[in-house]
Length: 385
Image (cartoon, rainbow, N blue to C red; front, side):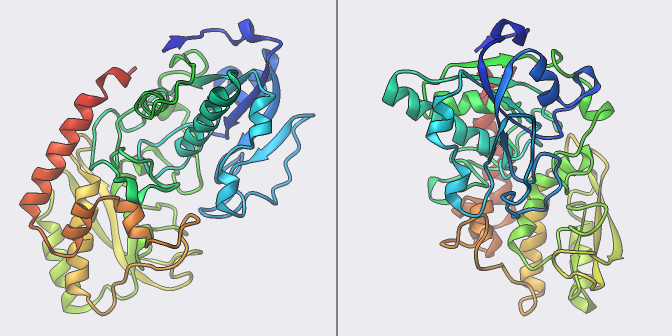
């Protein structure tokens, strides 16, 4: 991948940019404003949650009504699945496309899936016409580092919350993951990178953390998200409607002797890496709005060793066993898909689903995850910038 250190070299080019409020810091301003000093921004592509992360999950941005000079606004999270794909005629009129948006290190997080759909669109355009815009990625640190968790997403479970072959926690930067897509899926798109530190400081994730979406308020949320996002496929609150989403979780039915046994089992799990603080909470919106929930706050003592995915899989497996009448996996539409339950799209692996059903022991799961994580880490070394 070649690198560009100054966008002024591309002045006069017509540009599209995928971004939101998380791209902040250069000149103490939003990058989509600062970039306008060097290049002509023709099109602003909007991801899920909107430009300023004002929308909750799975809420269409079609009614936001943004105005940004004479720039065209293209919403890539609208009212149907077709809205996720950028229009061909828009891509055709652009000279460059800039991806400048923060990731949280997990495959469920949709921003880099949106970037991948743009990358696919550019690839198709190039194959059909022989011409395509230059694809530029403003790189940024993975806020939870290069550690890997999970197993590759099987093609049968691919969706907006998971691109095939990627594990739950990928350990790559945005440029790394998008270059992986480009090479692995033979897209043949010309990708250039803007290195970390050119348009934002390397320390942005601690000094300049801007929430990329409403329920990722802090960097610490990113550490628990690779596992806790699975709760979206269940009738547990993942803490939306609280100040600590994904760290706080539970449900009104977590009571009685079954809860005592659950506490006992959880207390013995990953004991040197995490503390579970028992609590009650009252979600102000989303699941169990205005209902008292019994639950926990997940406090990480050792982020380098804590395995979020294994924690949540273990939790759900035991919850299903101890609360067979109350606990449920959700049905219905999830991220525009209704053919498979959300838990299947999120887990993305029949082996993990088998574990959740009690089909394999913990030791087998741990061994399986360790092997798959090692394989991914080795296979993606060249994409670590």
